[in-house]
Length: 142
Image 1 (cartoon, rainbow, N blue to C red):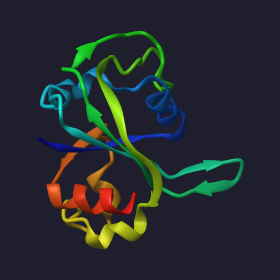
Image 2: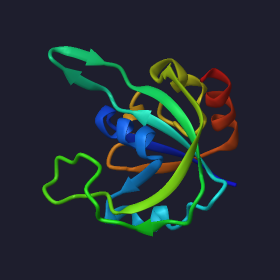
Image 3: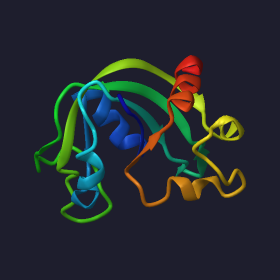
C-alpha cells in the first residue's frame, strides 16, 4: 500500500467529497498509474485568498482508492486552464474528514526536507507519494 498527498484547492475539494473521485491533469498520468486500490490519499488544500481573507493550507481528509486509474473527461472539476478536465481519475471512499493546519506539521513531516522553503515540495504537483510515518502522523491528528 502507498500513501499519497493530493494537492487541490477548496473548490475541487468539494467535488472530491461530493463525487468520491480524484482527478489529475493528463501530464500527471504517470504518477496516477502508480496508484492502486487500497492506497490512501491525504487531501491538502492550498493557501488561498478569498475576498481579502487568507485561507491557510490545510489537511482536510483521507480517502481510500477503490478503483484502478481510468480516463474520464467529464467536466466536474474547476480549472484555471481552459479545457482542463483532470481526466485521469480514481474512485475513492472517505476514511476521515476534518481539518488540520498544515504549517505546524512541517517540522514533523519527513518528506519535507527543506523546512524553510517547504512549498517547493508541493509546487507543480497534483500529488506526491509520502512515507507511511507521515501518513500515520497526519491520520492521528485528523
